[in-house]
Amino acid sequence: MLNTQLWTELAIKLGQIMAAIALVLFLVHLLRQYFSQQIEDADIRYRARKVVTLSGVLLVFLVLIAGFSSNLSNLTLALGAASAGIAFALQEVIASFAGWLALVLGGFYRVGDRVELGGIKGDVIDISILRTTLMEMGSWVDGDLYNGRIVRVANSFVFKEPVFNYSGEFPFLWDELTLPIHYGSDRALTRQLIEQVALEELSDYTQEAQKTWKQLVRSYRIEDARILPLVTMTANDNWLTFTLRYVVNHRHRRIVKDRLFTRLLDSIESSEGKVRLASTTLELVKPLD
Image 1 (cartoon, rainbow, N blue to C red):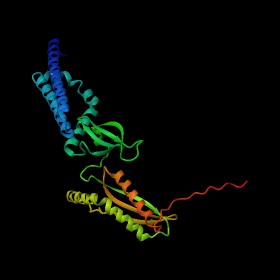
Image 2 (cartoon, rainbow, N blue to C red):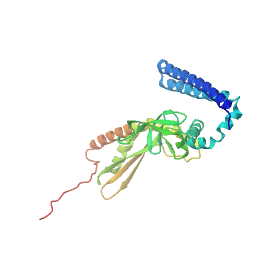
Image 3 (cartoon, rainbow, N blue to C red):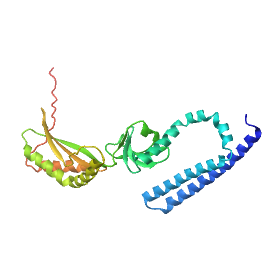
Image 4 (tube, helix red, strand yellow):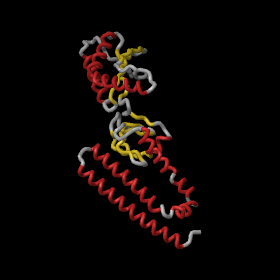
C-alpha cells in the first residue's frame, strides 16, 4: 500500500500537471480564436485551426511525460491495478484514435469529400482525433441536397463498415435516365436526339472523366470502362425504353439530370410527332348493378 508521503507527492504533481495542461488549452483557445478572426480563406483557416489543435494535443502529451518521468515507477505502481479497467473503459476512444490515424495515413477521405458512412451520406466538414463531422444529405430531402443536420461519427467506424467516397480519386459517377417512347415512333431519330443532347450537355464532364479514369487505370488493376455517353433500347409490353448512361461530377448529378430532361423533352416536342412519349393510361369503369 502506498504511504501518505507518496500520495501527497502524487497529488502535488497532479496539480502541477493540471495547471500546465490548463495553460496549454487556454493558449490553444486564444490561437484558434485569433485565426478565425484574421484568416478569411476558409480552407487556410480550417487548416490553421487544425494545426493549433494538434499542436496542443502534442504539448499536453509532452507535459504528461515530463510530469511523471521522475516518478514513473511510482505512477506505474499506482495505476497498475486499474490499468485493465481503464483500457476496457476507453476501448472505443482508443479505437477512434486508431481510426483517426488510419484516416490520416490511409486517405480514406478528407475534409470536403462527399462520403457515406453507415447509411449516413454527407460532406465531411471536420475530422478530429475522435470523430468525423458530416453535413448530412438526403433523409427527408430528395436528391444530393443538404437537409441541415450535422452528424458526428466516431472514427472507429472505418474499421467496422465500408466507407463510400464520392470524391476520391475518381470524383465522377455513372448515372442513367430513361425515356418511355411510344411504339410507332421513329427509333433512329429518338436515338439521334438523345445522343445529340448528351453530346452538347456532357462533353466537358466526359473529357475530364477520361483523363481521371486513365490515371486510375494506371494506379489500380481495373479494366478500362466506357466514359462516353451510351444510349441503349429495350422493349416491353407497353413501350420502348431508351436509356442514357453517362458520367457526371458527383456534385452536379441532380442539376445535370434536370438539364438533360429539359432538353430531351424540348427535342421530342419539336420532332413534329415523329417521337412520342408513352405513358400508362388507367380507365376506371363503374361496376354494373
